[in-house]
Length: 105
Image (cartoon, rainbow, N blue to C red; front, side, top):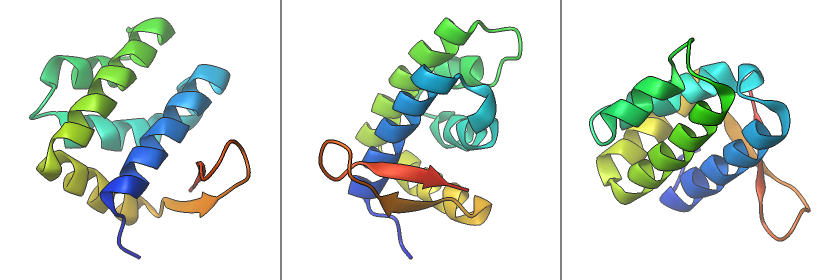
């Protein structure tokens, strides 16, 4: 299944919600993929995402910055989609407030 830019956008939104609710540790692999995909468009924020000494608040802020950067850059969005496919991450529709997506690894 090919991830569209809309799917990447929804996945990043869901990731942000989950990180805010549960913290970044359960999503470290996915966050790492996001950081690699965003390294060329937002290197400082991408570095914070994977910095073990960064606070949780700093990581959440960096995730917001990186998500926006990935969505503005077609190459970064395609790189992220490819990395997530390799990790076996797929999207599944759920009933929240519309057509939000859940991360399934």
